[in-house]
Image (tube, rainbow, N blue to C red; front, side, top):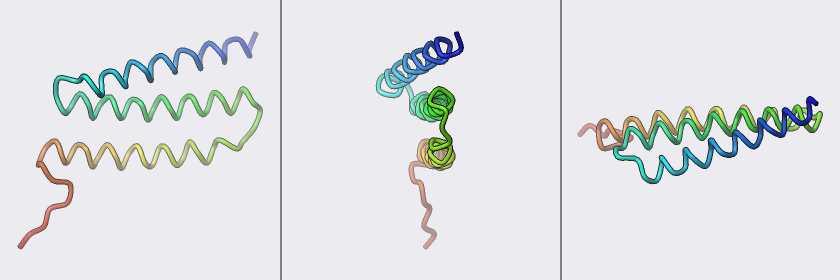
Length: 92
């Protein structure tokens, strides 16, 4: 029963990732695209965690940490780009 719930959770997370990809491509504004990319990162983290539990391994825990860090940095960079037009400001 537990394995069936994990498989259902993985399939729902896959559907959520596909819907977020659609929103990232078709989003009406830049902020919607940034939000969709952040949600994709969160869904990838959740999917990796569910897959780790399903396969009874700790191998994916490093992947979860890496995706979390990269998702956070990417969200900050995209948000600065949407707000200011540049990621890194150069004062001259």
